[in-house]
Image (cartoon, rainbow over the protein chains, first blue to last red):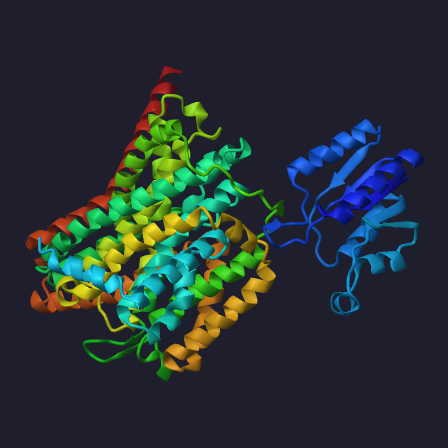
Length: 129
Length: 505
């Protein structure tokens, strides 16, 4: 069993990572960090820069948690990718960060968080920054 | 040398419209330089229909700006992301990205921009003095000389270009074959038209270029998969230190000269120049092992050379009417659309156009130097656009554009057909460049060949009795047969050596 966290380099992603780290420590399970950009474009702001990766590794080490960072790009929707990796890594809990989105924005763009919450077949921990 | 037309050329460039299009050209050039998969040849081909509505000088100023601007843009992604946006920036990746990893991305970009500026400017100055001389010399050329020159050009394009030589020759042969389609210019007999009225006038250059370079490259780039990387932090400390400048000054000087000379060569151009400059710097270096670990010369040399070559490759086009590489072939097409036939008469008959274009390069290079560093962040942002969004828009522009040239649906069919051919060629390792160049030079070759045979009363030995065409043909034979003879000799030598060993045993 593992703890899976969906990470992007934003305040929401940071909050999710912090919560997931505590969760992994509490459950004494390894932590899987999913930081998957959408495939196609050569550059993406969703990818964690090297400095952030180093910091995350250091924090996990300090807390005595095994860290598994997955940065392979995905095609299609990120919600599907999170659920797929959750299945694959046999996650006991999925940790995601919630951001504020207006009702119109949600109508137009949809919500990945909502899809993960509704479609997941395991506990989901939604964190706010 | 008469300086009046040169100064008049500056007056042409400084007209607000021309300045605007110069700026537009270099900005587009930098953008396509940044984007992998869309090169300057493709962009210029796609934009050909746009140039119909504007003045010839303005059009060529913009298109040439795209060409040399792309050489600047390719550097940015090579250094920051290890992702060469342009074939001519591939070697910059080795040392440029190594420097970026050491936190010296700013230095690498600064050196590259300064080197590019110096290389480009040296090349323009040389172009300013050399081009009228070459053109004056070429005024004496008759059909036999042009036939020999075209033949030599096609051969050089096929043999000098990067990649497999056999494949390049095959592509060139197909290009020559395509050039024969249509009505015979002398007898009026129809060739390869299959009774199709649209083919009777021969294939137009524009749909071929737009298909092979434009559509073909877009289709091919859709297939490429890049690993996605994080957006790099802002680049600081662009001004190189005195030590770096001193270290790279030699490389910049050598790169300028080498790039200029290689740009003149048919089939040469920016890519070959950057490769050659990198190899030369590595050979000359006292510690070659530094290369690949972040040597400043490894960035300065190739970046200088590719800009120098991009500029000097205009000389054969503007003075002889012979395009030296694929991008020049597309600009040749643009000149033809404008009703200007490039050749030795261009300097004297259209001084405004000639000097306007040449002098616009000074302005363009200054614009690029000013813009290239502060706008790095913006250009990197553009890389966040996925090809799946970019490609359909580009294809649509291409297809609509080609229709507007002749208002003929047949041209759209041609673009799609040649787009598929271009895609398959790239897929199987054929360079579409030699095919397009051979197509352009093919009509010149056939025309001059038959005209000279009329002059000589059908006696082909006439080509060898005229001094210039004789020399060119001797060069042709040299280029064609020396590698073969050398290969045969070395084979015999190894055979002999093996024989000796057997006897000893």
